[in-house]
Amino acid sequence: MPAATPQDVRNVGYRTMIKPLIIMLLIVAVVLGGIFGWQAFIGSMTRKYMSAGAAAPQTVSTVTAAKAAWQAEIRAVGTLRAVRGADLSAQAAGEVDKIEFDSGDEVPAGKLLLRLRPNDDFAKLQQLQAAAELAAQTHKRDQEQFAAQAISQAVLDTDVSTLKSAEGAVAAQQALIEEKIVKAPFAGRLGIRQVDVGQYLTAGTAIVTLQALDPILIDFYVPQQALEHLKIGETVTATVDTYPGVSFKGSVESINSKVDTASRNVQVRASFHNADKRLVPGMFANVAIDSGDTTNEITLPETAITYNPYGDTVYLVQHSGAGADGKPKDTVLQRFVKLGATRGDQVAIQSGVNEGDVVVSAGQMKLRNGTAVVINNSVLPTDSSHPTPPNE
Image 1 (cartoon, one colour):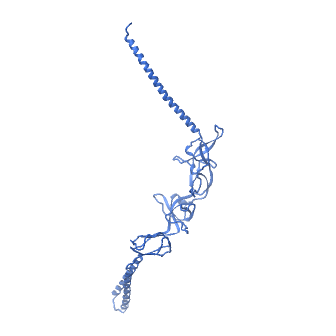
Image 2 (cartoon, one colour; image 1 turned 135 degrees about the vertical axis):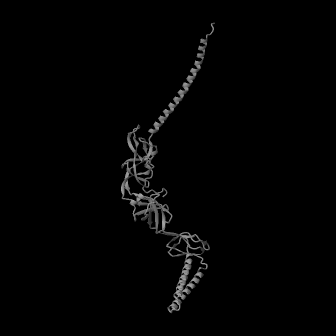
Image 3 (spheres, one colour; image 1 turned 90 degrees about the vertical axis):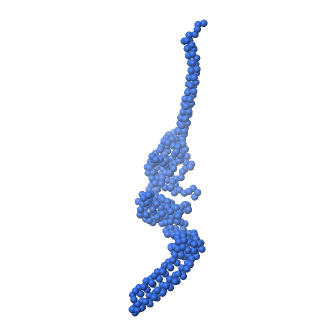
């Protein structure tokens, strides 16, 4: 048997290496084919799902755009305050001697409310009054003597000065006594008593609040643009959450003479009759003032508007022929709108929607141009010009 040559050895080695290499390449091809096949399957299923989702109609509620009488309003939130109100206190310090009122009393102007213990104030007053009487008698006597040229003018001048000084001392003591007496400076309703008999009060300690409640005022702020439509005597309507469904009528009493430079708002004060005393200072109120003439505007519920930084839009429902099942098919068209004023749940549409257009009022988040829709108006968003809480 001939001996193997070097070439034969190399050929045998090549054949031995080729077989594992082919097997490895086949395995790699199978793995890569599986990966790419799986990705293609996932992509196909995703496109199918998205296509089915896009084709599925979305359920929405709709409203038909219609014109309605529109009275523009200036709205604001205000605070009630008394036409006259004060926290009463004694001007001097002392111990409470008598209290002449009860919490919640209606009192006339000048009514005595509280007296501090006078101590020796009246005794001092009597001393000073006696000194003043003596100075008056001396002055009178010296006038007679001066007429008879028995005394000089200097003596008479001294008598006049002494008399005036004594009378001033009497007046000062009387004022001190008055500082220990608290009276109602005006007619009104008292609040809750804050002190008791025997309590020592420093000067200025609040005793009780006094508020004149009829009429009552509401202070509120409006933008400077509203000044064009405001005038003294303008009718104002106010509501407070304390009395749901009740409106109070008043009128503009005054308009501040300057605009706040920080907010560019101007303060307005309105006056309201309050004979039944239902409104009290410190309440907040919603205020509305009619502005301009009544017009007819196309209105939509605010829920129909999609607010965006690049513009406000609505979705109009359009009939797009028949669907695959032969039934009428409705789709939506997105349209930009220009909005006007708002009132309650409604907003006025200045352009972009015509009277009679069917507009999507709920369900816009899942819509885009051309999306098929199914209309279900069994539940509709609120569309009231003067909404009230649901529990009323």
